[in-house]
Length: 94
Image 1 (cartoon, helix red, strand yellow):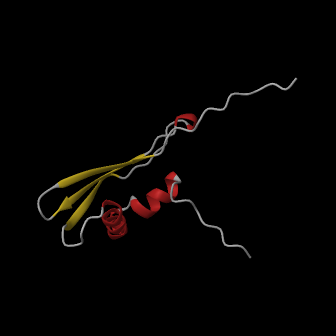
Image 2: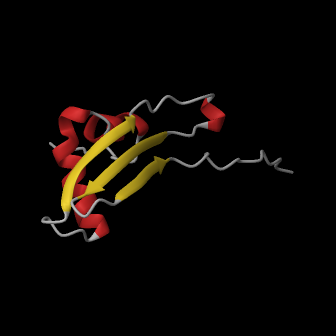
């Protein structure tokens, strides 16, 4: 039986993994790795807007706003957005 994985780029899956304050440690670890932020510099993060609600299906745009606070007093604002799907023009065959 083949194992299927869900894409973390899916709005729903991304929100389940990263958009819940209860999973802030997962998101914090991910951001430390991506931003190459030393563990001793990381303080905390705050999820500002976890609601990844899509508009119309054709104009899907989802944003997760996070504020990562460093021990040196800096705040790094982070947002995740999924792009609008590409438009496909119908073609006629002759």
